[in-house]
Amino acid sequence: MLTRFAPSPTGELHLGHAYSAVLAHEAARAAEGRFLVRLDDIDGSRSREEYVAASLADLAWLGIAWDGEPARQSARLGDYAAALETLRDRGLVYPCFCTRADIAASLSAPHGPSGAIYPGTCRHLSDAERARRIGAELHCWRLDTARSLAEAGELMWEEVGQGRRVADPLAHGDIVLARKDAPASYHLASTLDDAMMGVTHVIRGADLIASTDVHRLLQALLGLPTPLYRHHALVCGPDGKRLAKRDAAASLASLRACGQDGHALAADLAADRLPAGYSLQNP
Ligand code: GLU
Image 1 (cartoon, rainbow, N blue to C red):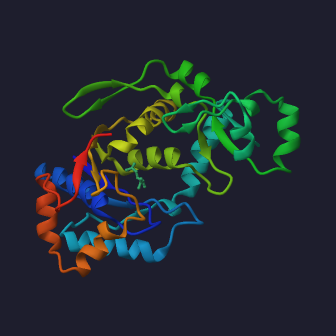
Image 2 (image 1 turned 90 degrees about the vertical axis):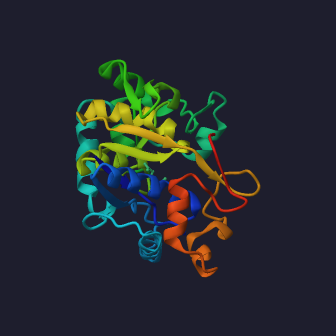
């Protein structure tokens, strides 16, 4: 068994991150497997080195030891570009020149599990128009999801303890694989990395279960193995809402500053015991 914890260094870790890291770490240790840390640091405008150091310090405070050096997505940009190139050669991605405002203005933009469904405007551009605009305009790359699914066929994954789930990537529309401001989207980078790292069990919050629809399709297209998944309940604050990076009171740094014992907290979280006022909820 190989599990991972993959924080984005864009803010302080909070109790929700701790719960996720503890579950992934415990699962690996119980099976005498390996536990890796990956830093999802390709969002150049929001990732900060100080949060990398703080996140690793938080894990150490919890008594979580990781195997090897933490991996960094920023070191793997060439692999993401190569995967995108493969999909481009197969005609499964297309450049999209739409702005957020263009998409919001489209009356036919219903919402799916990961936000507004892209209305497909740029899917229909001619090769000549693409070639003309690509050198001149900012663009992202989108997956032609329907065409990709037609190639891949029906897709499933195993949700640990719950059985098989059918992946529904069509519900997401044509998702972005490479952004205007970042060389790979979370979906592409995370799917490739989990495969490259040899992750056998992806243990992460239930807020990401819908992403698995997309990750499963990318695995099929790129010939990657499918790990088992466990999407766990989310830690909610005293207001009943799931924690966000702005909830300073639940940050691990502030709990540590209040004199909390990190190892004791990790043991409690492993047994689904949350500090007073916090609870676990399934979305
Ligand atoms: N960096 C992602 C996050 O913090 C990781 C999600 C995942 O575990 O796949 O949300």
